[in-house]
Length: 557
Image (cartoon, rainbow, N blue to C red):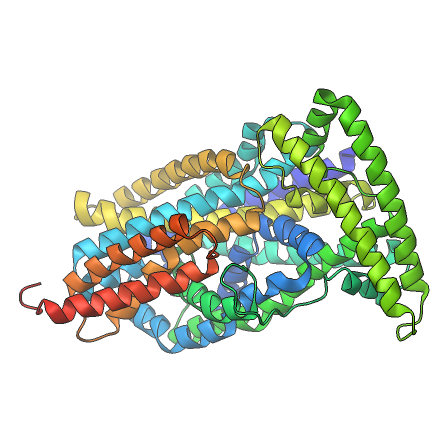
């Protein structure tokens, strides 16, 4: 990468560190450290909520998902607006009015300490693993493209974020998020402009080519639990996932607990309801345009350069043969795409041209599948290279300076999400465990020191997970698989909290039963995709919890 691009990245990292620490100047007590003294404006909280979601996994993984799978992934978010409305009239006023530090404190008031601790523990495990996945997204790409050791790339992302989160708390996190959102959106806009300029056909023709390849279908109304992204999995499973994520996950709850009032907390959540789906659709569309660009411009056989080198060195003759077949298939596909793009939109021969392009695209995909299989055999790692498509385009095709701007945006997205999650992990650790069970009475200075130490420990844990998560394939799916394993059951406990006859024993047993059901489905029925785990977990917790509460009277429980 050109020195100018590196200069942009280094200056940006230094700015985030200094500005984040400056924003937190004067934060002395734990309420200021964890909740910014509940004084932040709704728009800053809303941007922080969106920045927390818009991680490097989104910029790298979702664009790659769009390039390989099209618009179908947007169905994942169809339950978001409904979830935000439900939360706005239920949990938001509950939790904000309770003046709690964590969502799980409320569970002790409603049920008992063991239910609170178990729920908080499940959050810590799920969010710690997800945080590692978010670190992995840029780290694995930097490692493959620049040839750096993965551990160094993880440290490049993790260490600066841990430092400013340890020193500044939620105040530093929130105001850094606000600035980072502008960097992220600006980089996306610049990439769209570059793509439109570089495409050899009009935007309309490009979208027709993408449509012929099946990339422009945002809806799948089939009711098939083995399909991850359908309208029904998004509306049903997605709603339960979003209810749990925004309503019971401390990394999100902590954002709206910093708002000045319940109405402002609601407004901050509604920002996501209004803007998340259009923003995700835009990111997927960028991936689709990258796919079209590489229809006309020969793409690499393997997007991961480290895997390409390994296969080339281990099987030079087989790799050369695959490369020759691939080049031929790519040339045939490009010719079919030019014919389709040059035809009139409603021409009589358009169906024939579309079918010809699809056949050519399928042959390209078949050769790629063979190459991925060879890479997996040689390296012993997952060969899915969806996470490398966008970075390769950026480094190979963007003008000088814009590549550095995008790398800075990827780091901004990663840092905003990592910082929010580390801060929430520290909050739950100190409030739900250390202050509750180890040291109930201590000064704010003592709790503040423990909070900073907890942030560092969770940062180390996340970095270790990042090295493992890097081998698991599409990181946008990995992070949601991790969350979906826990989210439904956690949500079920909060639903029980709003059912008057639910007892502490019912909630505790129901939570264990919900996790057991999800584990049984996850490992015993792998054809049931992860979005449905949220619905299964929530229903199991509520069903078992209500039954147990009815069988064992409150006095006995």
